[in-house]
Amino acid sequence: MSNPTVISLDTAESHQTLTITPPTTGTALHGRIRIPGDKSISHRALMLGALASGQTTIRGLLLGDDPRSTARCFEALGAQVSDLNTQEVTVQGIGLGNLLEPTDVLDAGNSGTTLRLMLGILASHPDRFFALTGDSSLRSRPMSRVVKPLAQMGAQIWGRKGNSLAPLAVQGQALQPIHYQSPIASAQVKSCILLAGLNTEGKTTVTEPALSRDHSERMLRAFGATVEVDPETNSASVIGPARLVGQTVVVPGDISSAAFWLVAAAIVPDSDLTIENVGVNPTRTGILEALEMMGADITRENEREVAGEPVADLRVRYAGSGDRPPLKACEIGGSLIPRLIDEIPILAVAATVAEGTTVIRDAEELRVKESDRITVMANQLNQMGARVDELPDGMTIVGGTPLKGAEVDSYTDHRIAMSLAIAALIAKGTTTIRRAEAVAISYPGFVSTLEQTIS
Image 1: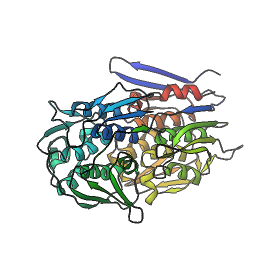
Image 2: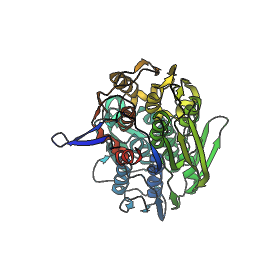
Image 3: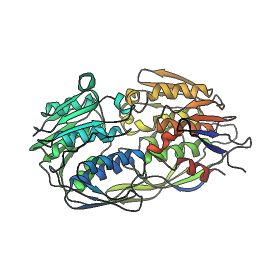
Image 4: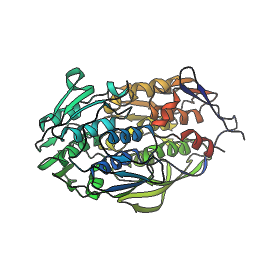
């Protein structure tokens, strides 16, 4: 069977157009694949390596555009970062409190994690001035969620729209510890405040309404910081000032990237795919729970721990038979949302083939990601013949309507682009995805892996 995937690059506009035409006899996914390193852990390894004394060695780093933005920013702040590759990256740290005042504006590119977490670090370095910006998408994303708690600590930060939008200017200060009651469960907010607390005398605490991913707490502890966690109250604290020491970090595969293959194999008939070396941190496994609620056939194999993070191989098989749909509808909301917020676009694709109506709520955070993922995903799937209705904080998806090929757009959002590519595998006819180059933000090898797995 010939491969259904064709990629063309519009050189005049510097945009990629991904065209997918499944064969009429069907497409199945088989084999064993490895996915890129976890983006969240990659960011934090680079940042803490730069703040630590001595050398940090990172293996399995994600080579996407976002971690590259983080590396460039911290090089401008005085750290020495070797060429980025998956085998071994070294960071010669400059030591907490010793960041240099850069001679130019720090550019976070498209990375909200880079910008938000860096604000906490920079705000706590007295007597230095920093200017930060990002691309057009990042400059439209809200920063007040981290600027306001930092201001409570004494930070001086200025920006557009009442200090809520980049570009931002930071005058480093000696900050005061706070106990921040976050109105949202957000690992970026929590991490920003904890990182500010590293260089602040006393105990800095963040309490959330629900548990968000805990990569920062795990890695801070590994680098030598004193971290306290209270799971009963969803609170995390750091005692400052801390002294961080360079470490060896092994980055597991990113479950957010694995999610595309989990859904693809679950909904494409006759598929049987194993995704190796996936990080299964409990604060990130909401995608597994949601798919299992929907009846997906997923097995964890070779479970182990790598550098403080739980890891497993995930085998997923198509669960349908005959005319029976492979999945059933479910309701997704509440405390599960922070643990799968990045996976909701691909879950929406899964819901299009599920029996019944899937309801997703409490996910208003999706409206301030790289795109308004609620509106964009609903519109693009409806273009393909799906039945998706927007809710203020989510969407409803009526399953069972066959998808058809269409011309769709990623809106330069990497997770939208990859979700639409998986939807194209089960659509009748040709799907054309505009601005598909967005996948490089988190998964540069996505298309080649797609070609590898299709049989």
